[in-house]
Image 1 (cartoon, rainbow, N blue to C red):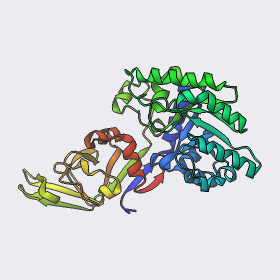
Image 2: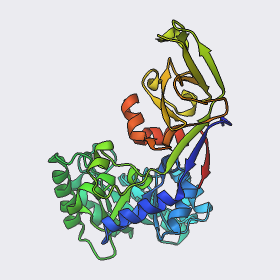
Image 3: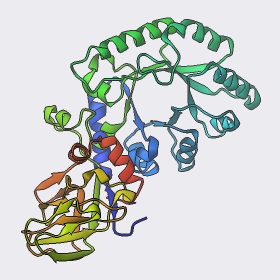
Length: 370
């Protein structure tokens, strides 16, 4: 890990965002999606914070994540969204993990495991209502539930996923919700079963379909699924970004007008210029596509990136920012003084989204928690 860079996680913001989302869906359980190491925020630490705020349901992508989370002391429901390898299915029983099943063969494997373990293994069934990703086809629902009953499988509920819930104008979400409702009717739902369709976009923008359980992903970490537009349209401005990314200046140097900067000299100074060399690059999750486009905060002022971002370093223009010396703090993402650069703004400069930036930055640098 680069010793200069630090992703600072605001645990108070995580707790605030979870409570804010619960207020938006008072009749539904809010599952915290902590997959991919909680979008770079630390799966274990995030789960601890949310558990202390009465969160009892957690979602991960892979079985190995579920094992780590359970062994860290997480006592809530842990749902595995990408299924399981047959060789590892014993962990479902030994660690009390709940798989999302999207393949008929896995139903038989769960039934066999129940016999071996002499215990019930709860499951959720995943349906594809338009994402063209994992899941059973909706028309197979009735037969599928009949099979589960015959195999004595404990179906806790059904899950699907909105493809376009971040788009408030699309008709696709209504169509997806209709398909999902047809599955619930075919399932013969009981009070003990849950229906979960809503991701963050569904929580915030598709209030007609909250159902019994919603899944908070990007919103939990302080960002809106439709980016900066979503924040502008939220009258409460309720979500607070939980990650700040900082580094410090390695060297300050003066260069003359006409000097090329970094690989390929894609930037040439048009005046005498003061440059600050920063120890952060694309190996630290700071996108190369920010070259000559991005900005950072130094002494509360914006400093533009000059030249190409290197693997471990980049240069910014500090001409006109007084008193900048080596060792000064640089905010790459977050607040400094009266200004803020968030993941949505960085995503706009680098042609990506907040989700990717949070994952790559958080999983590529040392983290601290405040």
